[in-house]
Image (cartoon, rainbow, N blue to C red):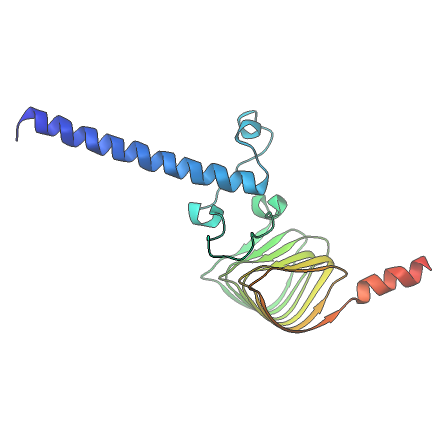
Length: 190
């Protein structure tokens, strides 16, 4: 091969890397704007960019009926994570936000913090948190002290107890819904 061919091959390779990096940055910026973090705010050092894989930051697929609500950034940047390869049986009490990507068979209590069950997460038994977002599978009781959000890939069977319930199109439910928390507040206020 001549020197000209090598320059062409190197040029094509460099252009491919530049295009790939541009697409990656564009996806990351779009995901960050969906979460509510601007690139300029991060440059000033006021908001940390979450260290997530690009797949976790992608917007919903085009065939999804509705967009999912913004992800709670407090849940992303800190707290406990139950990884996708982790299986826990027993009782977990957390005083911080919790993200479940794996399997939990038992009880999870974080009454003052948000809890998120991702699309790969499976929970059996009981979850209690301030606001609970479910995008995976759950069988049992879900108790949200402020709000429960069932995202488009949620598969829920059991009981939902929350003062506010938001359910996205595509979620599958076979539940009894209870608003005990809101009734108690109304009874106290009367």
